[in-house]
Image (cartoon, rainbow, N blue to C red):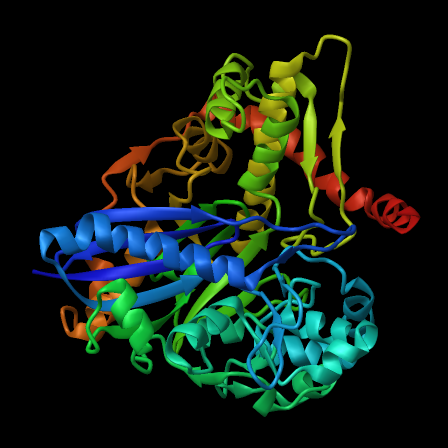
Amino acid sequence: MKCIITIELGTNAVRVFAFDLNGNVIGSQRGYYPTFHTQPDYSEQDPDQMFITMLYALKNLLNEQIHPKKYKVVSICFSSSMHSVLAVDKSGNPLGNAITWSDNRAKKETDKLKTSALGKTIYTATGTPLHPMSPLMKIAWIKNNDKERFRQTSKFLSIKSYIIKQLTDEYIIDYSIASATGLLNIHKIKWDADALKFAGINPAMLPDLAPVFTPLAKLKKAYQSSLGLTADTKIIVGSSDGCMAILGDGVKGEGKATITIEDSGAVRVMGDKVLKDDKQRFFNYLLTEGCYVSGGPTNNGGVIFEWFSKQFGDFKNPFDIEYSMQELIAEASKVPAGSEGLLFLPYLLGERAPIWNAYAKGAYFGLNINHERKHFIRATIEGILYEIYSIGKTLEENRGIKRLSINGSFATIPFCTQMIADIFNKPVQLRQNFHSVSYGAFLVAATEMGIYKNLDEAAKTVVLPDEYLPEKQNHNAYMKYFKIFERLSTKLAPEFEEIANLQ
């Protein structure tokens, strides 16, 4: 019996799944690693801790669920979160921690580029909005503020590129992760000269570009031995978590969009054309040549509700965050739509789409003497979902959306799923207890094997059996409050920046 392994390098966890060749899950493992916020605007992770955690989860899956059942692993396909940057020296050793997507330290570099003609040129070429999330900005920050690390750097890698280098001794980056760097010309599929010049680097300081299906060099013999894998096990470079999620939901073409809410979140569409926007609000990332995943991301997804749960939740057992979140959601369900006038701006990590304001801050608004904890809980969830809706609303200026699919651990909580249907006033489809990113990676590996002719055929096989229908009364209530939410998000921009500068 043969199987395919998928490895997703998420923001706070690695998720390893095993699929048989019919796409059925036959095993899974998860491992966690922390994010360090050593200063305001800093978000970093230890690359070696991430690598060790990935190996631990993979080995446990193989030893406990794959080898005992006599499955042969034919390929391993990777996916990962976007926008990470890790500087390494000429020996490939990390020069400090990896900087993650939520890091906002490059605000000054971003402000400078955003107001220039060069900034518009780079956005048009790369499809990546100008924001501190972008590796382009992170590298520019290192060049300007950490000159010794910049001088010692041989290459700038994504965290996925670093982990693949450890396994295969090959420096490589897929089109999707590369197009999220702000350094790749997505029309020519080559590193962009203007972006490289702004960052102060040359193409040799970046990994080699590769299509999503690219089989990499063989696993190093030490890992073949320790993992119990054969030399002919293919290692597939794969794509980003966002591109894999939309593929895993089968969303391609007009009328459909997908919402992902894990720690961060996004609303995405997929097609054969770049979404053009003079306001530079959308990303356009390559899945494969001529296939673009477009949309907008938010910094403030499930990680915000997790923050709320840690600060204000009740714990049955120490560190039992899932129990705390379930109890809070049950309490929130007792409050009507709109939280009786309490609004929450969820911008604890600054914000990307649609306001693209790294200075943005969180706030509760409309508080009165009758509000209780249950109102704060529901308002927090509503604020996260209002932000998601604001991205979708902006996206609909360019692409018609008749129905949604959702994925991610936060979005697929039934209470949240119904709220999404009500806020968007659209039917929402999903598969319960299924991970779309991993399934997208399975479809890539299966297509590379020849099980599917191409990704279009693979996407058409996806079935989303569960559907939530919107409740019109709730939608009308949400829209009244959303108008205020939307105005506050832009009206408070000067105050966001002023309070940020005081820190």
